[in-house]
Image (cartoon, rainbow, N blue to C red; front, side):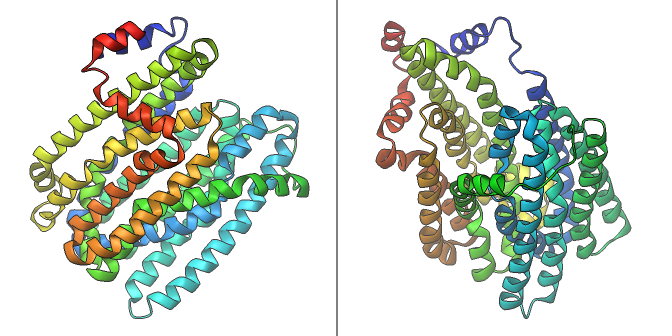
Length: 442
């Protein structure tokens, strides 16, 4: 079965539903708008600041993200699930989640401050910028309102609130560039975005409130924390294998190298939303297939994995060919080394695409703990490989480390922890090549 027929068949399997529901439409629109704006505004900021100062901003943002992962406590999906299944207890669940987030943010910011004081004593600019961006941790607790909207299929409210804030701050950053502002103001702009987003979410909540005030419940808190800790560890591990290269670069090569690396990876990561968007559409189809047609369920995964292999390899190849042109066009001469980063990091799209669709398999098969094992594997590979590659090869070694860690998480780990999934991913490589065999099986 060729690629065109595969896509056509997938569309026909949902005759009474649009390919993307209203919520998917809003989420996809949000991502597209942010990506288009981010590519140009981020490149303009990078050109204006130069690799050294842009590297400080990128490093500070990555550093804060590590502590943000802790402050989130891994409770998002659990809260959405519980609110959706127990709407009468929504006020208790949301109130408990909000207070847990506040506590987690306070602990995370304290740990951030202590870590910075111990590691950046002689870098006052990096210390000031990171502590400023770290204030985002407190304002992001209002994202609990987003969980309430998600549980009630009201994603458009979150999208409108956050996209409005994002576009406002993007305009503000352009104003900072035109006015010749210093680095600190760009760090403050990131905080302002979370402030405006928090205000917009609170205003939106006034038009779609819970039936009663949010309250604390010890029993709910204990249950949420008991269920969320594997997700928290998994989230931290993912951040490690995705971003550990930034910390190595800062230690071995300095902040200018971080800026060069950030410029290259930002263009590569632009494409990540496509497999995520496709997976959101495919997930309900796959769930129904598993119940009604086990053979068709397996075949559907082969088709989708094959589609991801070929699509992501095609996009990666385009990025490799156009890497120098794109970097020179958007970032300028100061970021010439970023073209090699983009050409290397572009292949991470293959692993990301496989990883997004394997998460659907994991959910359908009830193998949620597998995600933890995969993330830990990716983190271990990133830590070990980065230690050897980055001191010797710099930004290219950092990009290679990230790509290898992502493949370890999304592909090679399955050979040990999920052989059935690994076989699906391997055999899908030649799915469209050996069409006659698969058509017979179908």
